Image (cartoon, rainbow, N blue to C red; front, side, top):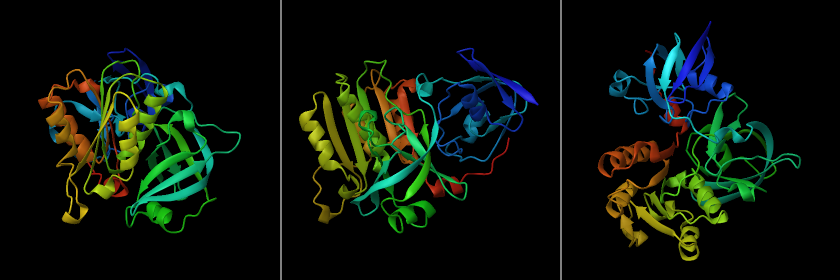
Length: 347
């Protein structure tokens, strides 16, 4: 059985096959809805169900609360239509500009940026090129059929090697391999580019970049793309970590602040120890933004990192700092543990 889905306010329509999620059908039809993890863990694909019914698959409560669900919200990545639907969602322009490919890549370099962060540089085949927007990600295709997603830290204009920032999650099958047995010249396969987290270049609004931990990876690509494009839009980068060592490219950010006009860098540490001798900003990174910029009504915010940081920033920026809801762009990093904790909720 096939159901029809109508998207508001654009008026676009597409068909959805039996058992297919709304997001999968939209992507197949070239209708670009926002998304991130595609697994019900991040909430990026959240939208409103105006009419019709869906069966909602496993997802995390933080991605879609009971209150949001009662108000008609749903997650399109795990919503399977049970009838024709009318939905409300913001379509993303530009994300379909480049083809999604499955490509074999060679590990060209492995470099420790911190005790638990590996910089993995990948060499594409000589006949291949990956076209993408700064901020997008790729998914490794593992032998067991599972996937692992990592943002590209390299800007599109410098794509001779694609570099990813991989945090070690002890017990994680893939990251244990990266930090243990993986060697240079190993062959991997990935699919990409994916995701709707990238700089909206049709705006002149000043930009706040908010990163926690390795959420810095796509932010780095965005800054370097912005600089390469010689954009004059002001950028303020706030990067948060528990301890100073978590800001594993702190020196690079400081060099940007010294050399790039209209760029500022504010590092924030939440749990510094006495031995760290930290004299900079402390506390939650999104709170530092609120202290410096209590009125975000004229800004765009791009946030990437741990889901709790993204959720807190979105809630507080829109409710307390007048940030327009449609000017908050986010990529919440979900770990293997996050995906394992997806709640078995069926509607």
